[in-house]
Image: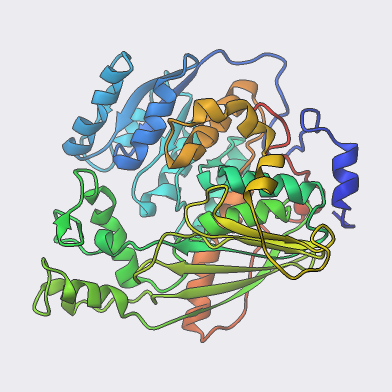
Amino acid sequence: MAQKINRKDFIQKSTMAGMAVGLSTQIKAFSSTKKEKVRIGIIGAGFRSHEHMGNFLQRNDVEVTAIADPQQRSIDEALPLFKKYNRPEPAIYKNGDEDYKNLLKRDDVDAVVICSPWEWHSIQAIDAMKAGKIPGVEVCGAITLQECWDVVNTSEKTKIPVMMMENVCYRRDVMAVLNMTRKGMFGELLHGQGGYEHDLRGVLFNDGKTAYNSGVEFGKNAYSEAQWRTEHNLKRNGELYPTHGLGPVALMMDVNRGNRMTRLSSIASKAKGLQKYIVDHPKGGKDHPNAKLNFKCGDIVNTQIQCANGETILLTHDVSSPRPYNLGFRVQGTEGLWQDYGWGGKDQGFIYFEKEMKHNHRWDGTEKWLNENDHPLWKKYGGKAESAGHGGMDFFVDHAFIECIKRDAEFPIDVYDYASWYAITPLSEKSILEGGQVQNIPDFTRGNWQKRKQIFALNDDY
């Protein structure tokens, strides 16, 4: 937008159910008729895909018709879900890394959910669009800046939309805080923080067959991501997992819809935590081959981002040091701020509103505030979401994916979010390599961010 919008005026003039849908360059508006069923193919049948399959198989408006994975073990672990929900077994594509392309040729697949290793995401998303299938792509969706552009360009050329399956944007406390920002309770937003602060040493230390944690083997599915995730920490130094921390803050700041990220700078600490973990581990030791690896990714990576409307964002990547799980959210405005800790429960954070708390400079607990400002989506679907993965977040991201396809509506987290959020990774790598030098963030909307309207969670359906 050429001018900033006062958030209080915005909410007063808009209703949660009746907000007009902003059109992107490649998505149609609401269709007058709804698609009755969505037929889904799953590419990558490892552990992460099970959450999506479980959510889809419980719905009467979804059929999972085909799955593709080159590993028999992944196929074998996915099929019991179809028996559990009394659904017919899907067609199987397991003949090598490229067999997913045969899945894309099927005429009973409307869309695909891509849960393969990171390096395959943009390749398979592009192949899906060229085959006329709508891709929903798990994190992390792109490795290079060129891949980000390739996904955008293909989406615009084929007129096929892309949804990024970033579930933390749907976390209950995050959505309540989003609700509060839209009510103007924090005043004009100034700064946001988030990150991926998650001890993954047990996943990243593996022997090629098994991932290890605290002297014991992880569960049967643990090695699913350990097969490929360790390589990224071994060979790359940057903000490798940006969207969990960035997504919620970017949505609150209307990034790509009235605002945009313009530049960043990243720095990294030395890399010591993972090697120490391996040396100290009962399954490791100083003579273990993995203890001799030179891991490239710094234990703590900090990335600061500037926005066109003047806000700043700070991201932290921390997966190789001993710590409790925490995404480290902070939302700060001219009239108050919120900070979270822990796993994101209603009582796991602090909040401060200057006027309401009479300038007492003391934190208040969040439970009262989050309860009073619970987002309408959680009020409506919280009961259904309870059994879904990641504390219910997976329900909402899958629900939005299906409902938008049925209604021929724009995805709430779209291809421009996909490209700009994932661009943080290669740009942070370049910044660190250049000693923290500032990197310009491309405008993947080609100027359309100034007129695109915010649509995320502005109705009570999805």
